[in-house]
Image (cartoon, rainbow, N blue to C red):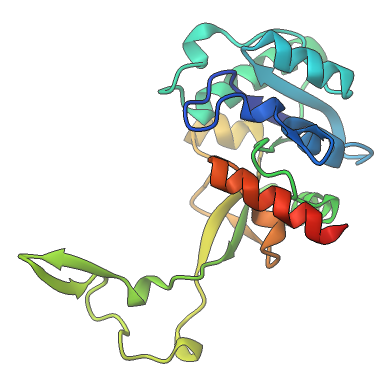
Length: 229
């Protein structure tokens, strides 16, 4: 099986400027995602799609493949991750041959583990290459959520279990953004990483699903690293 690991890293970031190459634990944030994908036999290459020359240089030094800079029209705030992934996939396959799976690793999830990646690939292989999506148990159950209607609180989900004990609520999961794995054919056809039948990769560890998008998120990541030392 040939799986292409794709890391997308736009140069512009309004909420946390320069986040992709900001130092975390002694190395740029994006390098965490490069390093965890190394030495996995099913991964044929670790491809980085970026519009920024500084990011490209750092990624090449870290051992990733950066054969081109992303076109400007795919590096805007409104650019979709699917369009970026399809561009990268088309360019890669035209130059280096077909792949069986596309593994999207967002650089803002530095603590995903190699074990989770291996489990995702195993699930993908055993389930006929159906999409695999990283999810985690949610700490706020939707059946306890409220909305405001005409100035009054109302259940967000009608008929929900506001009076149900937490241990009696059905388990629910939230997309954690750490791992997306899909076949090229499925992505090109559906233009989404979540198909009608998507296999869950359930990740329980809170540390692993840290998603860095703000200064507060970065501070949490730094604190977690200090705890581990």
